[in-house]
Length: 78
Image: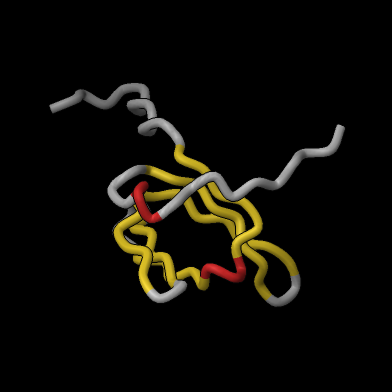
């Protein structure tokens, strides 16, 4: 079975949780987080640890909106 790589996000998805796969030297990198901006061909994704990932649009090979992360077992929600 072969997975299809699709870019299914737009600048209208700013504020949504997304997952991305992009080309980097030597392979691919993934980032999951909140799409905080998309301007001048550059996406910025804030990961749950607070790290801001800058992704050139032309390096994207796949991206889509994903649901919120499920709560971790043993953690009380506030």
